[in-house]
Amino acid sequence: MLSENKLSKYLLYAIGEIVLVVIGILIALQVNNLNEQSKKEQLRVNYVNSLLSDLESDIILLENQILTFNTELEKLTSLSKRLSSSDATFDTIRNIARYEFLPFFNPSNNLNIDTYNALISTGDLDLIQPLLRRKIQKHNAEQLETLKTVELNFKLYAELGYKYASQFPINFEFNAIKGKQMNSVWEQVNENKLKSSLNGILTMKITNYNMTNILREKLVEKTKVLIKEIKSYEK
Image (cartoon, rainbow, N blue to C red; front, top):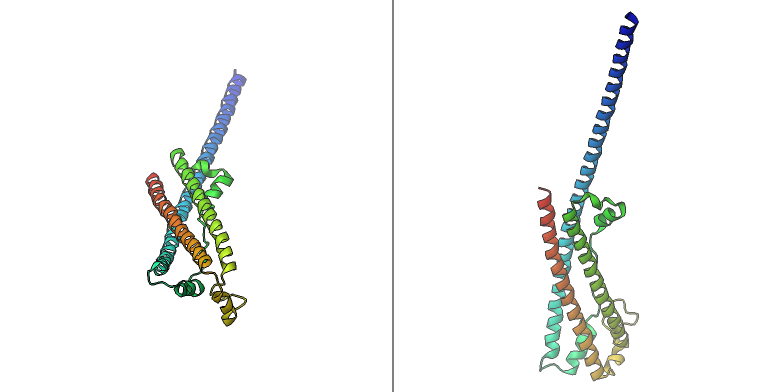
């Protein structure tokens, strides 16, 4: 009888120990899960903040690019009016082509997409809520499409600008041949050829700048909308 009591007590003690161990393991697992969830949440918050920073930087970048092109457009429009004036002579056109008009442009065409690329490469995009994730993906697609279209327009214009500069030596500080040595070239230039070429390159440049600004202005508005949506999700 005494032995049975001792065995019962031992079994109860052993079972108690096992229960405590199991409870300890469950608590440890729960704590670990909570820690993992906390880490993921902190990672998500970091990504969101970084993404917001990228988008806000994009707005500043795009608005500066738009302002630069608008300033250039004012100059180009002024040249166009002078060239189209009834008082304009061939000398007027030739002097503008030689000394004032430059076929070059600012080729800057980039956006801050490092955070989005990091989300994709790491697979961490799944940390973002599904609906917001789809909006971010859509915006990135619009960013890439804008960059692609602007790049194509720039490339087409650059080819035309190169041909123009090869035919008509412009007033450029890095010209290999400068000064009076180029006088004979301009004195003998074909009037109709110069008018046609200058009209083509100037029209292309004005059109390129206007189209690029339209695309960038639309992207600015879409970026502002996405920023508001992200912030509303984070409230």
